[in-house]
Length: 181
Image (cartoon, rainbow, N blue to C red; front, side):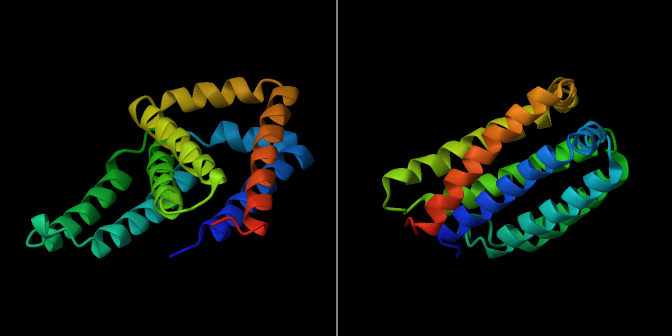
């Protein structure tokens, strides 16, 4: 199991790195963000990563209530992922990314659950925001497109959002370096 300080450093680096990309190449970042919602390559990437990650969690789950059905359910989930990849191509990137957000939130919740730190409340708060957006984008995936259109309409707005993400990333990085538990 990953420690909270390690997760904090990883999240900090990812947030700072993605924010640095926005500041270094705002036009390229805008193009990437605008193409994302209907991008099949991104959709397939997030679908495969999310499916494998989910199946790993499902395989390691040991709830006795469905022990006898575990194997058929495992193969059913694989068929479901393949079916989604073949037949649900509209906003596939958004839907697959939403599943990825749920799994990242689960990782954050599981890691922060037993942390004995006053800062530990930050992690479930961030995870709850991820769950909110995961649910929202799953229910109405075109809202991500609309949100990204709004965000990229102004370079100042995009950079302000990146600055907020960078501040959160810096907070995570500092907490991770200070070895919060």
